[in-house]
Image (cartoon, rainbow, N blue to C red; front, side, top):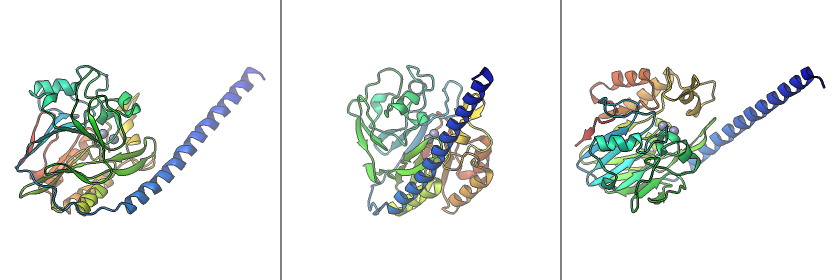
Length: 331
Ligand SMILES: [Zn+2]
Ligand SMILES: [Zn+2]
């Protein structure tokens, strides 16, 4: 075979490999979507009659895309300090994209006068790199607050699938359950994504006395529709608000790789050639408006400015920016 023949042979081989990979992903996507729908339909969810209530809820973003002041660090990831009554809980642990120690999360905590020792529990919404402290953590099925040692001994960690962690006491969540007085998990809701595969995500529900349920969401992969439906089926109080990531990267992506808008392609449960669009966002706004919420805050870590502006306009005085260092208080 001449050099030209070898080149044609290699190109043919590469094309064959790419076609096989695309075929595998398409098949996996189809099967996973059907399985996620079957799991969703089959999940029996008895109402949690009394999860308790708290008088005061504060959500303080420690990691997200925008910050309230310039001395706080930002990332395309999520970590929120949730203070619900007497419970202080860390909701996700950020991205730490450059594997730093201390991580942006620990440095922001120090700037805000917070310590790991203040935490009563850790809650991991789902096992994506921007929520568990980096790609190595995701690959190793673990989470980390920083790239160096952080003592988490004795701290319970509510996780959405089996994970290991050298210090924390791992508690794998399946269905909805109370995690602290007035604080519960929705239980995991699965979704198949084309490239990222099977993802199961849980959200937090806090029952604020005299107000109702505040739902705190990580990335929103299960879809807003299913998260709302799960909460309405499993909890016995009205929805007061929704705060967190809902994944609307319509005009931009916060995570880019060599010019490729990763979030627009990767984090969606739709086909890759059909990314989230303006109509999807408008539909979701209408869905949320139908619940007449008193509090709405959209995380900028996985939503573009166009979507944030649409939410801000749609919800007016009940809209809150989700910015690092800016506390969202319900009492
Ligand atoms: Zn995610
Ligand atoms: Zn995310």
